[in-house]
Each structure stands twice: as structure tokens, then as C-alpha cells.
Length: 309
Ligand code: SF4
Image 1 (tube, rainbow, N blue to C red):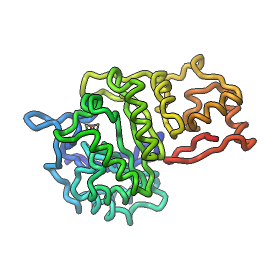
Image 2: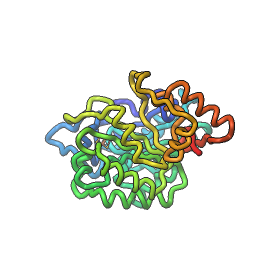
Image 3: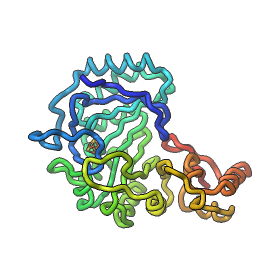
Image 4: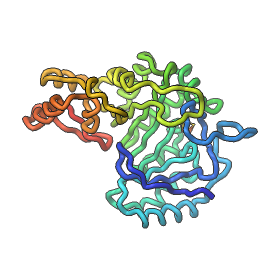
């Protein structure tokens, strides 16, 4: 049987992460996203499902994760994921409650979900047990949602939104949203504005804006980094994290004076670990000086430090 745990790997946004796969036998998901990087489900099985048909026994899962935690004590996060959607695992709450006493104090528990079942009360009970819940949301428009996430029949984006909102209202842990931009589907102002409005309303701690990074399931394309920067401006006032820029082009780095930095921070906070992707050396020094002089602040939200006013 394939391994239940994997890693540790270095994650830029979460630190050293040990992964746990709740569906190690095969892909089991209620979405069939165009950008999915997992091995697709083989015909004649349906590409999506509303429940796991092959279920990892809870004691086997707990034993395996306990064993891995013993071997890797220095991890920052224990990341619960699946070859598919982890909230479909029927013993999610039992698992997180059972493993908690074995997670080192400095290590956080994180679940990566597509958010589709956040309205389910039992799943909410499980989600509450994690330190960090990260969900994906690629569009709040049914037309784009259908094109990108290709959800199991009956899953409608308005219901999913309601579910996410209801969880956001009761949660006390960190809530992060990942928005994945696909060329010619949701890379437009309308889609992004509606997502931004929704995330503002539910008050997420952080938004990770990204695009396709690894070979996708379908023939779809990523947008370039400049497009992501342009779209990120729509998320005014929110704590937004961009991916690492590949091949930094020094000529494209922006030069800002103090006034421009303050104007920018009035619109949106900037993640400190990303300023090298965006700004010239001189501007970075200005950020630092403004901070040293108490004119701007550093706020840690969703585990990342941001410059803000
Ligand atoms: S929700 Fe995740 S696992 Fe499921 S199809 Fe989409 S990317 Fe793949």
C-alpha cells in the first residue's frame, strides 16, 4: 500500500511540513478540477464521488502518523490532505482528536480542503479541531466554478459559499483561502472581485493567490506573474500572499518612494517574504526604514508577516 505520510518537505508559506494522505489507495474527490495534479481516476469509475469507497482504517492511520511524528519531531506543520478531498474521510474528527496529543507543542495542524462540505455540521466539528484550515475557492460564479472545479452532481457554488460562511462564523482557528487562477476562465476582474467581496465578508486571515504550477489534468494554462500582481490589486485591504516569482527580472522590480509605499499599504498589506519579488532594493530599504521609524507596522496573520499601516 502507498505510504500514508509523506515528507517532511519545506513549504514557503507553512515551514517544514509532514503530510498525511487520508486516501492513499486511489484518488477520491468530489471535484475534478481542471488543474488537479493527481493521477486521474481510471474509467469506468466516475471521476467524482460523494463519499470514500476505500476507507483507511482509523487505527492504521493513527499508528502510521504517530510513528512518523516520532521520527520527525522538528516539523512546523502536520498537513492533513488526501489523494482527493480529506473532508470525505469518514473519521476525520476521530483522527484529529486522536492524533492531537502526539503532535509536538510547536507544531500546528493544518487541513487542505476544497471547502465544498464546510456547511456540514459534523465536518465543522472536525475542522474546529485544527489549528489552521485552508480551503480553495476559484470562483463564486456558477459558470466559472463549473468550468474549473467540475464538481460532483448536486454541488452548487451558492451552497458551498453558504457552508464556508457558516464555518467562518463559528471558527476560532486560522482560516486561509487559496484562489487558483486559470487562464481564460477566472483570470478576469469580475470573478476576482466577487471572490474578494466574499472573502472580505467572511474575514479570512490570509489569501494565497496562485496559478497552475505543475502539469494539470486538463489542457489549461497558467497566467503569468504580472497578471497575478494585477489581479491581486482587486483584493484591496486583504492579506494576500503571492507565489514565489520564478526568474526575478530586475528591470521589472518597482521603485517606490515613501509616499508611494504608504499609499500602497493603505490599499493592501504586503507580505514581507514577497517584497523581493516586487520591489527594488532601494524600495525594500525604505520599507525597513519606515518600519524602524514606527510609521508602518508588521502584522502576523495567517502565519505570515505583512507590512501594514
Ligand atoms: S479538489 Fe483537489 S484533489 Fe480534488 S480534483 Fe480538485 S485539485 Fe484535485
